[in-house]
Amino acid sequence: MPWRTSRSSNSAPGGRQGLRPSQRLVIVASLVAVLVASLVSAAFAGVFTKASSHAPAGNLTAARAQSRQSHASHRTPSNDQQLAGQQAHAQGKHAKMVAWRPRTSCTAVGHIGDSTSVGMVSPQWLPNPAERLSAQYARVGVKHVWADASGGRSIVEEMPGQINGYKVAQKWNSEGFKGCWVFALGTNDTANVSVGSNVGIMARIQEMMSAAHGQPVMWVNTQTELTSGPWSQANMQAWNADLVRACAAYPNMRIFNWAGQVQPSWHLSDGIHYTSAGYAARAKAIADALAKAFPADGHSKGCIVN
Image (cartoon, rainbow, N blue to C red; front, top):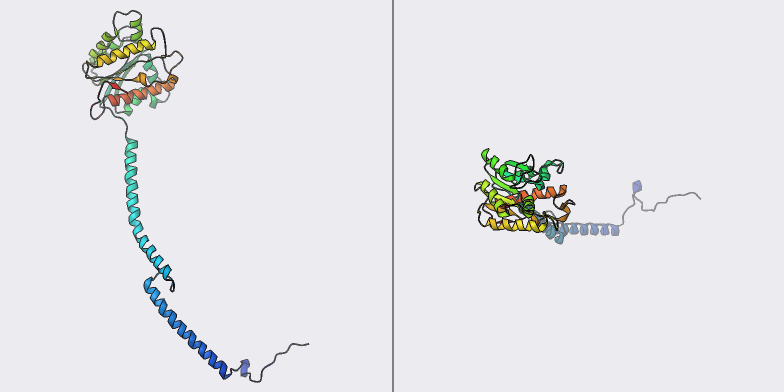
């Protein structure tokens, strides 16, 4: 059956349907209602716009929240600046703490030692120059280092082709050395005394102190892992005790308590000499002790430096 369109009898010309009077009244009423609603909505929108020009109209809660947010964001840069300032201050203090290191008043050091000092100046034992004795002294502020280390050295006795510790100091004095002295001697002196030398421990200490001519002196005390023989720890303790007694008579004298810091793993199997790690630790410890014994500012108290 073919489709067909129909028109009512009251169709308007041009295909538009005519409106009955009752329909026109409904449309007019609807338009009036819409107009009134628009006017009311606009009035409320104006109220909300005054509350917050940034908030959507008709949402008072959002307006208040955004007003608070806007106020908070206005204060945030100031708070951030204060926080950044506090952090910068804390970082500055931390940088100063990190940068701080021990410093000594000794601009020149004369270090005289035996075989327990040889490894601290030897590239064979310490391939890294920064770990060696001269670099460690420089780290704490020493500008000039005079160092003489010789195996088997003592203050009195001499081996073939060697001069003793006292003569080294005398030689440097004649060459014009002025500064602080570090005497890392006593290990062989103790052994020589124990086997019958007629020069006792105290006499040896006094001889070296006379060579310093009143300049600052730091002794490095002695230690071994041996329980018997001339180089036994018992003999080392006798030497260390005499160092303490001598210190009471010399205001310019300090003693670094190396014996109190040594770790057994730093020793070689002979119980006297050190591994590379031991020599590195010894060099650093001696330099740090010098800065404590004769600090850049003030004066150390007491004879013993730990």
